Image (cartoon, rainbow over all chains, first blue to last red; front, top):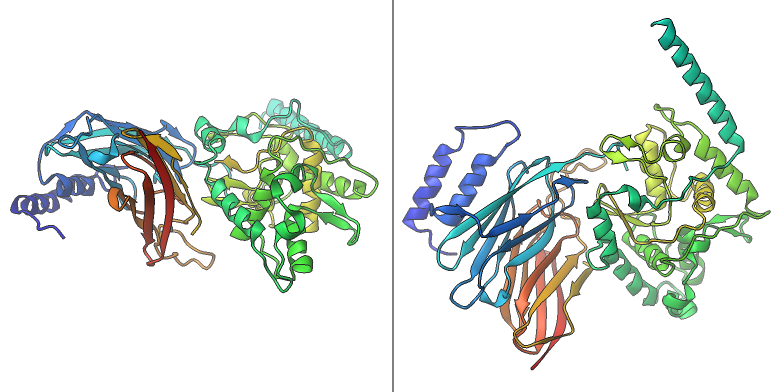
Length: 151
Length: 263
Length: 106
């Protein structure tokens, strides 16, 4: 287990303090996503860009939605993507997955399939070897099936 | 109620009666026949097309292994009698369900696997919806992929075909709907966010996103029954086998797609 | 746990290759009710590691937000002939493993 830095500790504390302030409809756990992001960044600035997050604008079923995330990076020994984190704020557990890669990945691109508990904005956060953080979002409308299925 | 809406209502009721009465005698096929894949979104189509990403392939991998595995008191494997499935099972799924003369009843692929398991391997037959039965059924089905369904109705199966057709047009459940009212009369139209399909069986067993797993055609029948709030018949029941035969006739000529993916 | 992996049989040295893995697993969320109305306990494949000739090249931490029968695709640089080994574990402690050989030319 890595030792938590003082900066990170205070960032988490601030996140917890800020938690119950705003609670918009349909964004059940947005605040806790902010807290989770802070845990990763330790309070460092997150810039928009370099990350590409692809999800279908309309998902046939929230049980399985294809997701592709890629980061614009040289992926050399000195300049690479360390990790990619996925968050779905309306999911009961928003942190969908964390992926750890390194210079040996050659290309920072991951595809998977996720569950989405309703229409929402999905967030991808990338941590780079130079200490910078980048993010992208994608909006997905999740449709429900027409017929009830008790089987 | 205005006289006009009353008249329209009566007219609709009368038409419904006529259409139900008419259908009871005439089995009809959708024109033109379209695979259920044509009614799904691009994501589902892509998932089915990609033989690695298609989650149904996990069940097929399981089935492929089971095919080689000796089982039961007889210590025989499927391969022990049937050899390579790629040759011996080619086209088989396109000819099922069949009439099992020895037992004077219809039998589908699942039933045949269960029968082999019991009488040839002398092992406990796999349960409906088990990963094993779905895996073997899908593995056998895959060997007919691309081959057109061809289940001719003959003297032995006529009775079952007619029973299946009658079930297809029978209204059921609290919603009082028949299979035909959605999949024969209204395919291509919207029901909520979905487009109603023609309800073919060529892709089964399928990986259904709603189920988050692979499922049999009889599970799909039960899904529809629960959708119209009808009593659910058991998997492998004679009624479902009759219906399966009727569907095989109705979709005759469409290519097998197993393992299918649906929403 | 049935799993399938897709690795090219051979690659040129330095080539970036795609690795794909699919695992048969319900990824039980813990929110789903069984027939008796009880919530089925959460059980997901929570960690997966891919090692290439013994060196970790990819690691995933997954939650209940990953779809049933998890599928992952990622990339790695083909640098030497050898073996890719995948190991994973679920919340109940059940482990799975698969391996694939890779021949690197040039």
